[in-house]
Length: 361
Image 1 (cartoon, rainbow, N blue to C red):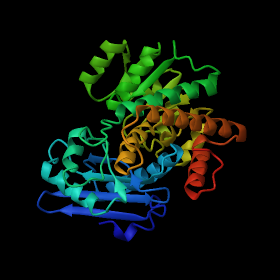
Image 2: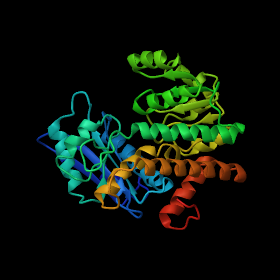
Image 3: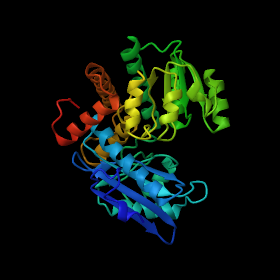
Image 4: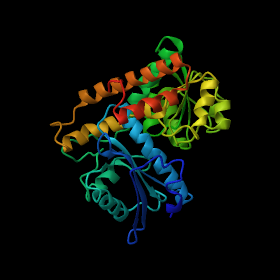
């Protein structure tokens, strides 16, 4: 469907394998992208989204897959990067037959790719996929169930926000800090609770009004709008919804000295990272701060691979702390060299994958 443009795409970036999947009986349309398996089997979640065109889905999965290569490298995991997207409306097109067909497609890769939850794919959906393949994690019913990775992702972002505050202001104290959280889903909601528990003043926005009302009740947050939250005066702007949220227009409107959140592929184009830097805003590269979920997933995978006897919560926490230390390294190096943080992070991640990094992961 997009094969004529595959190798010329700016997002291709030397992907090892890109597979289109179609199952006529169930109507499944999916793309699986393996960016790199140099460090280990590719790993990354599966998302379901009603992409307007196949080209949009193709571009998204390639960017997400490459991001997983960098994320897994910076998290110090022996995993490569991969991602999958299922094209369709999760409210009307998701079915057991389609999920199982997808599971069979994953199984055909024979362990080169492990999948897990992502946008609009739940733990229940993962259990359905697991009926057809063993190469799936983030489960509740497995030899080493790690469950929903979202809470661990949120904890990693919480730690990262404190690291950014330390870098920018010389203190990681959250009390009284105004933090604008865009997206109060599983990750953004858990993050908001972490922040509120330490006295942060929250400004929240989401398309789900019920979720907003509940979070306002729980934390005392002030509700803003999806469009208006970019104009809020705050200490931290935290995007935790869809990717590409930082573009020419939104970056000019942001009034926070820090951007740190869990959304993947936050920069609409790479050049936006330079603009953020030029404005004096400290940006936490998304794949460095939001790797908690894949750390949690790998705690399950390592058992399936025979590298551990059981899911180890303490191991996960140690990895989170190390990931946060790597974020601190990126931020400090970027400041010392006067460079955008995303540029330094990309350089570090590529060096880890190539085996030439001095960074201990």
